[in-house]
Image (spheres, one colour):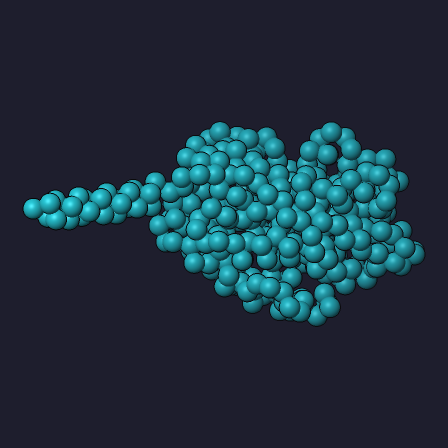
Length: 322
């Protein structure tokens, strides 16, 4: 009799344990989630990450804690995300085409694109040409004229090496038959700081990175690499307009959320829903508009399809980057 009683108790404990496990899975996330950013504080990706993190908390039920892992043009942060525990508590921003350029242009990069599980895209952010507000260059034509007069002498900085910003510069140099001295930084923030400090003639930050500095009167944007003018800078011409020559706009940064491959489908679905909710949140949308964050939402399936298409399309520019 006593033996049967202990058996029943053990069975009941087992059921409670199983029930607790099921409850735990249903309640994901149960603790804060780390959001890896592959660039330094103050740049476009970092700004987007911290803004999204602030507003997604009420939809996710937990905090997103931004962790900057900058260096090597994003490779350090992307690699950290690829190798993170796929338990749903480490996710990150991935930047297109930078994440693919790093992989296609370098040897022994410790990740494959298959190491990432796309969750949602947040932004599409064009590259701009920016100078210090006190710069002698009032127009893009003046900057290009100076560069052509002394090839390789003018320093121009951006994320890098082998980033979307450097890709945009190389494609522009090819189209405009000019030559700058490219200086790589660990994000738009440091490149902008160097521009303001007089170390660079110009920099190539994302539009969102430049917007607050333009509003504060510290930076002047001379051109936007896009097919049409940016709503952030409606009075600034596109680079093609300003240069009078067609310049392909290939450097715009797509910024989205990904998890390490192997994340549980129900955890990924929970994350996808939370980011879908924040992208429809009126408070977030109002903040994004006020802060000059250019949004472009894609769900997990659309984001994954875009990644595959972009990976194939980059092939024709790879030789210019080498």
